[in-house]
Amino acid sequence: MDRRSAVILGSCALFAIPLAFYLMYKRKITATTEPVTTLTKGKTADTILNFNRENLTLDSAKHLSSLINCSDHSARIGFLLLVQQASSFSSNFSAIRESGCLKTLLEYLGQDGRININKRETLCILQTVTNLACDQDNFPVIKDHMEMIFNLANAQEYSDESCAALQLLCNLALTPTGCLLLRDRICFFYSILETKDPYLLRQVLTVLVNLSCDLDSSQALLNSEVPPRLLNSLNFSLSPAVHPLLTLQTVAFLKNLYTKIYSSPSTFTDKLDRSNPRTMFSFLCVSHVFFASAV
Image (cartoon, rainbow, N blue to C red; front, side):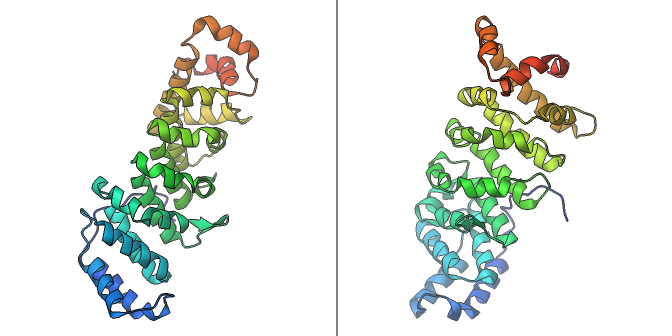
């Protein structure tokens, strides 16, 4: 298995690719659940052949959403790739959202707690939504599907899907509004810190660093309970056994939290006396000697 982290693809569109998928779709169109008319085929051809990834119109986005809904697996991936390419340009964000295409994509991640078993579709959707997560206007739509995203991200061993889902959560954590969507799942991120996989570890540390840069979220990080083996996990991230980037991320995370702790020295002792001994706050107060040289 290629253990590289998921990469967002945005510039690989060739004219032959959408045309090939259109021809495939046209051959299988009799299997769709909607009646096929000459007008429908004409609209499909216009959408595919006139596709402009840098300028996706609302009508084109609506038609792509419809094609994703009614096509079978072999043709659907082509339409998903078109939306993915369009999502690389912020000028297309509103069309993808207002057309209902974003909602359609998220519904295909899985329904009723069941994850989409088609890996290519899942990765394509996650990478598209990762791009769209840069726009806060998309958060209300994404919010309704957070549980499925967390289900995909929940892993201790490497998988392309888990890395892609964590990358999506990284982008959400870039803004205070996005941090709010993640604030009640901090213990989830702490649990993934126990992984020894460098790709998963890099993604979850990025999420935690982003959260620690947000004033309210940094307090939530301190108030949340930590796993029993957190000291071992952080020592691993600070050790020579990992890539220096992971060490830098760990140091940045700890530094942000210690800065928050010592921002009010007069209340520090009182907070320590009243804190839950299993919280990150108590853990850092007890363990500060171990991390002093790193931070």
